[in-house]
Image 1 (cartoon, rainbow, N blue to C red):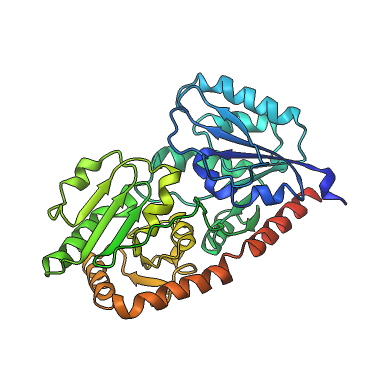
Image 2 (cartoon, rainbow, N blue to C red; image 1 turned 90 degrees about the horizontal axis):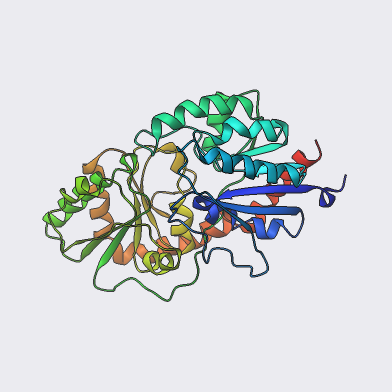
Amino acid sequence: MNTLKKKIFWLTPDYFADVDAAVVPSLMKQYEIEWMIISPLNSQRKADGIIKDSDVRPMQFNLKRKQRDPRVIIQYIELLRQIRSSNPDLVYLSFSGLPYFFLFLFLYIKPGKIIYALHNVTTPEGAMNELVTRIFQKAYYKQLKRFHVFSEFQLQQIKKMLPDKKHYYAPLALKDYGKSNAVPPDNIIRFLFFGYILKYKRVDLLINAFQEVYDKGYRNIELVIAGSCDHWDTYKALIRNADAIRTRIEIIPNEDIPDLVSSCHYVVLPYQDGTQSGVIPVAYQYNKPVVATDIEAFRKFIIGGKTGYVFKKNSAASLSSTLEYAIRNHESNYPSLTENVLQFKSDEYSLTRILGMYHSILDECLNK
């Protein structure tokens, strides 16, 4: 059966635009795709500059109410009617719209027509809207029939949780926010934490570990913490060595990300939990080794001693010793680490390979 004559409606929340922008423009050359980006009220994470193909113009749907405001239901119904009226053969979405969107989704779209892209199979402790998310996950997971996950670890998880569903795996592609001419400083070894600052990401652990290293007399080091945080005062109170720790507590505009990442030496992920990280494809896009915890979700993407360094989760002592090792061996190890990242990118983040996995998913679903 010719999948080119079938239609896919692709709904992307703006906070996942960097994920879909890496693949949808290429998929549109093979499939008839109506692509829409939905933006929550007052969203600061935009798709600006992410879509590189100037011929690709996704539709835009802007929510005028907060997602917890019952009045947002009116817009959800408008959106769902629009999707249904396009008469798609398949609906691909990663928007949850808690708590109301899924209450109406199945009134307009049959569950068998939906592929739900799941970025977190389980909700990490300390995640945003943790309790609400966990409650609603249990409810809507039961209704959905097909799931797309972005790591083999998540694939194992969801197969155990929902063995009677259909599960697909295709990894995150590298996240390209544009080119950068920035380079790290020669006289300072710069570590970067980048992204939303949430409890489970353990920025407190990183601050304490970095300061322990600094207190040992290392002065050629710097930590940059960049990202949005609702409770920054809690973390700010931990900082003693203000000269060595720079902060930018806000949503980082897309156009600033290339220089931010390119100007550091290492990206640090001190997470205590998680099913994947969207920061790793950003770090590797700009050829940066990663210093990360030894949680299972990261093992596929970080090779200790090759593409970065790994330390024990929730251990400030392990993190500080790892940072100290990276600093002491920076001159000898850093060139080979960046070369290994380049090779790992070629092997594991090949866009051709990833698009092939998407093709397999879509072809199977369209031909059901």
